[in-house]
Amino acid sequence: MTDLVPTAPASPDRPAPFVLSSSALDRLRRAKADSTLRAYRGDLRRFLAWAGARGMIPADLTPTDRGPINDALNADAFAALLHRYGQLHAVATEYVNHLADEGKAPATIDRALAAVAVAHRSAGAGRLATEAARDVLRTYRRDSADAGRTVRRAKPLVVTTLRAMVDTLDTTKLAGIRDRAVLVLGFALGARRSEIAGLNIADLEFTDDGLEVTIRRSKTDQEAAGRKVHVPYGTNAETCPVRTVRAWLAALAEHGVTSGALFRRIDKHGQLGRAPHGRGAADGRISGQTVAIIVQRTALAAGIDAASAFSGHSLRRGFATEARRAGHDQIRIGRHGGWKDGSPTLAGYIEDVDRVTSNALTGVGL
Image (cartoon, rainbow, N blue to C red; front, top):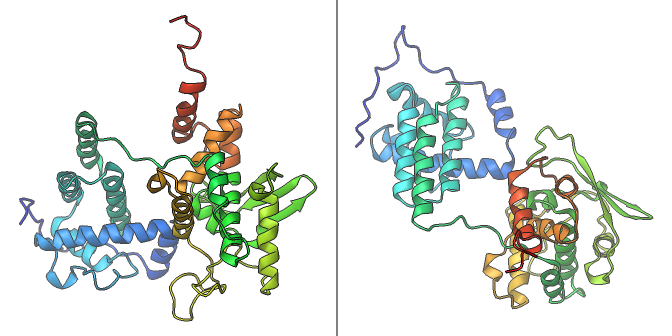
């Protein structure tokens, strides 16, 4: 049980929490990327299970692992929490503390808190006060740093590694042609894995100078203003983004595909699309997770020692690393890859390069 004291039930003086309409909830949910929503649903399911185990909500509203929570981010269970506890900031703070006691990564805890805050708004309860919860998380971060625990970051996938990986692909097969294009174009765009998976054939425009790619929506462009990225020809045929994409488009055309999703699923028989009852997008589009799988699988095939440290984000970080080594400034790198001006994440990647190539001790005469 918990030491938190339930509040009085709803009364004329304290009405039940207002629940948004189904259409409002639908638009609120779709304001977030699908991958973010999936993560939030998992986070909220775990939060509600924790609350249920402590008697904070009725047992029949406690979610199980056997089925997904409902479309309203389990609004019924969350409304029950609101009925019983009113303002949930103390509950959220205790949950953050619980996750810290379990040794969860700070980023994992931060996302779990965000999921609870979104559900709080979805239940019509307005903004969740998270100041105390964030103070607990801040202390946990400091304790983790003092204990020598560091944040795990994706290893940058640099050009020499990319060439070694591409060399392992069998481009006589459809999967090999696709995977090469995913790796090379993803690197050339400095793209997030969701941006790679979200590309359509119509987003590509070939020019005399190379390739113009339209990124219709991204993590830092939730208003879907879109951006264009110019990709020039490469000097190596196997890692030239323009030629590898042309080869993939030609392979798609041979299978009668000339529109729709650019990168598509390929089954174990080498066929495009997906099984009639399989999971995934109806148009056969790959997911961001597939991009990560392609990166790690190909790194393992290339016998790279640190293959397990690679992820879908390694393409993006590798682009930033190599662009900086080539002498490009942070603003130009950021606008090509879709980082916001002044992005601290990009600044960290650039500092990783600069502290070696422009080290303050160079030339001091030690």
